[in-house]
Each structure stands twice: as structure tokens, then as C-alpha cells.
Image (cartoon, rainbow, N blue to C red; front, side, top):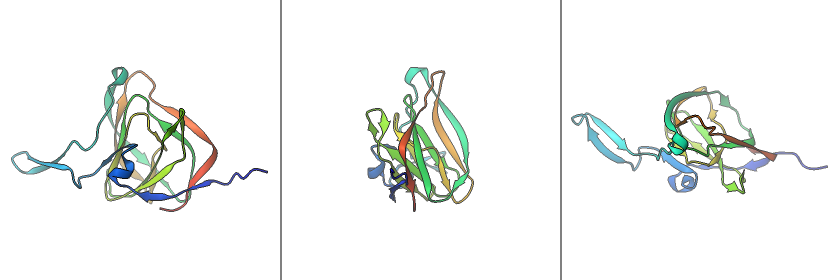
Length: 168
């Protein structure tokens, strides 16, 4: 009989270097600062590369309201957006999980999990395999910047054996 228990995923700290193969970390720490509006506002400039214009795409700004997940979280499928990036910025300082995977011949490879805290966000690069939104602790709202247009911009793929994020 085969073992169908989930494969464990270790949660790691979110850093710009660790997340770089998958996109951008959206945070003010270390960002270029510009004083604007007569010096009354600080602009943290160009925090993520929004990539949505393929196939006549256009930017969308949405709010996603994520229901909280309790650990362990099963990871049985991943998704990606072949025509554009997708950014998630929490509207509260509540933690959430980001689960990503490198592409292996058109399928998601072994997943990596990152804990995102302190109001930081992420921008998934075009074609990066990731799990749908994983809010923790409480219902959480996210500002989402992604691609709109007439072409479908979603691929999903299941894992033959699930993974599980067991601790954050």
C-alpha cells in the first residue's frame, strides 16, 4: 500500500533574496524614498514589477477577502498566471503564507513556503506556480494588482501526492 500522508513543507522567512526567483517582496524597508506633495508624503517608489500587458492585457486592482486557514494546511494544487504578474498587499498587518514552486516541465515542482508578516506583500512574477491565498489567524483583506483582458490567465495543476505546511 502506498503512503498517502502529506509531504512536509518547511516554512522559511521571507527575504528579497530567497523570494527573488518567484517575484518581488513588497516592503518599504530599503526602498527608494521620495518626498512628494510639498514634503508631506513619503513615496516608497517602484516596489514591484507589474507585468500585465501581454496579449492586450490591462492592470486590475481588486480586494480579495481571505478566510483564515489553520495549520496544517494541505497543498494539493498550485496555480500560475502565464500572461501577467499578481501582487498581494495586505490591508492589515496580519500574517499570511506564500507557497511557491519552480516550474518542472510545465508542472509545479516541490513547494516552498514563506511566512509574510508586518504588512509586507508579494508580487508573483508571470508564470510562477503559487498556491491560492492563505490568510492566517483572521479574515484578511488584500489589495491585489493583476492582469485583466479577454484571454484566460490561469493554469492549475494538482500534485499526485499532497504536501502540508505544518508550522509557521
